[in-house]
Length: 88
Image 1 (cartoon, helix red, strand yellow):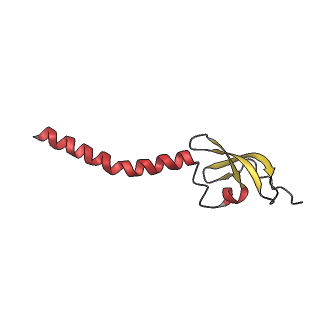
Image 2 (image 1 turned 120 degrees about the vertical axis):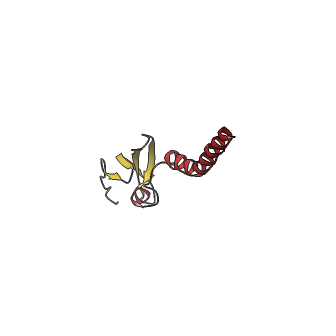
């Protein structure tokens, strides 16, 4: 049986590892993590925690960033329209 790495307390990107939870039949360790941006608690596999793709935050934080990026051009267009209406 593989030994479990104790990475409790370590931080990877915005994910802070709280504690080890379990190891599945494939030998993948799962850890309880906390997003330092919003405080949401997640369960992640060790390989996902260490990968650059998954350590950018939780789905809630990533979703908010994507929505904000999409809405920013719309907000600026709305502000410019309001400014034009005020000038007429």
